[in-house]
Amino acid sequence: MNVANGEISREIGDINLAYMLLAQKLVKQDRVAAMFRLGVSRELADMLANMSLAQIVKLAASNFLLCSFRLDEHASMSAVVGEGKDTMLQQAHMSILMSARNLQGQKEAATV
Amino acid sequence: MSTKSVLGEVREVQLAIQLIHLGARLQFLEAEVGLSRERLIRLYKEIKGVSPPKGLLPFSTDWYMTWLANIHSSMFYNMYQFMKTHSDEEKVWVLIKSYKLYLQQIEAQESEPILDFTRAYTMVRFFDSDMLQLSTCCRCAGQFVAHAHDHKSGYVCVLCRPPSRAGKARGSKRAAGGEISVPGMESIGLAVEAALDGGGLH
Image (cartoon, rainbow over all chains, first blue to last red; front, side):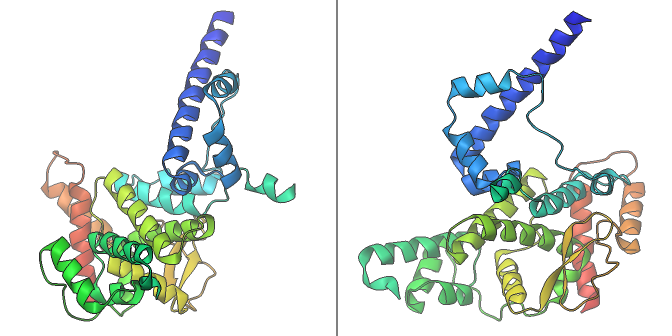
């Protein structure tokens, strides 16, 4: 049981690290394009860009996944996945839904 | 125009080069770049190796409503809106950036761009002049390009409810191809079909 838990934590940590490093790379390349791809606000994007490797490693070593589902409604999810759509149509649909979505971190920024 | 300073002129030339590479037409260049027509034509010839095409820009909003064109247009316009909201660049650069993003997206999907730069630009102008609008699909909640003043309630997008002809042609093609399925072939078939659709409508 414990061994399995440790395994899962490590896998989560690996994904977190890969995700954070990719996110930082994207933001450093092109901030707005990265905001579009990642679905994060400008403030969050800037923060990501300025994080040190040590900070990233520390944050990644967690029991929780840092990235979450972006198709957060059942209706959109089933619309995109359903009915044996071919890849091109699925990607196109995804891109349309994603670009209209509220950016992560924006609500918090607005209420502060 | 800002062409009086040398740096300003360099910027205009760089803008023109970007636009010509993306496939902008001369009419668009004249409207957006502060260089003389002669210089723009010279630049065009140097980059493309041919004279700029003559003729009118597309002027009908109907093209954007055909099946595949609507999918691509909606994809592009959603990106354009995102860029417009979140980047602090000038409008023409927002257009360039979002069109490049569209091309990247298409490349990642291994299909062909259906919306050319001129069509993309014309679409933005149609939106600005209130001839097109975004309608929200009541099934997937996505926003899709539609004629302005269309009924908004109960709208179902072309992806949630593809036209029956699109499905049929795909089916017969698949059946004809037997069991060999080549990724990418389908979308080419669809593109051809959409072109035929467009031809039939007008």
